[in-house]
Amino acid sequence: MPEPSFPRSPFVYSAISLVAGMVVVILLLTYKFHGNVTGFYRIGDRLLISPLLERSRALIYTGKQGNDGQMFLTLAFDPLQRLPGTSAALDNPIYRGKRLFYPLLGW
Image (tube, rainbow, N blue to C red; front, top):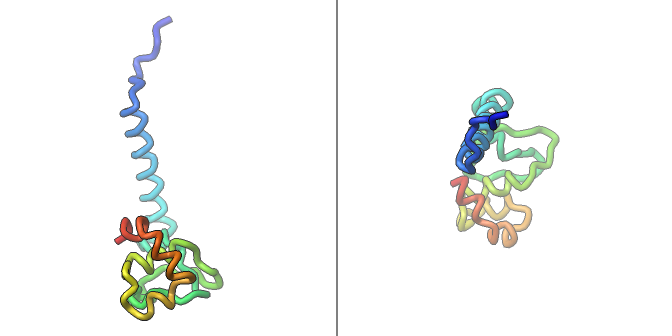
């Protein structure tokens, strides 16, 4: 019996994974977050938010604490924490400032 002719290259599997990941991101952005990219950051209303974030344009979950994404977004707006409101919006400014790769990627 002949073997299937599907190429078994790591490149093919990587391409399939990349396309599948992009489809998931596009579906989330389009249908769940209605085109608002701030939905990926999971911003809650119980903590302060970055002074540079426009509340009227952000997708904010009412009654929720928020999560690391909210802190990462705050650092993406002001990575060096020069504005006084940035440090106030972080739960632990020193700890969050040490983890700058993801906020820099978001920036």
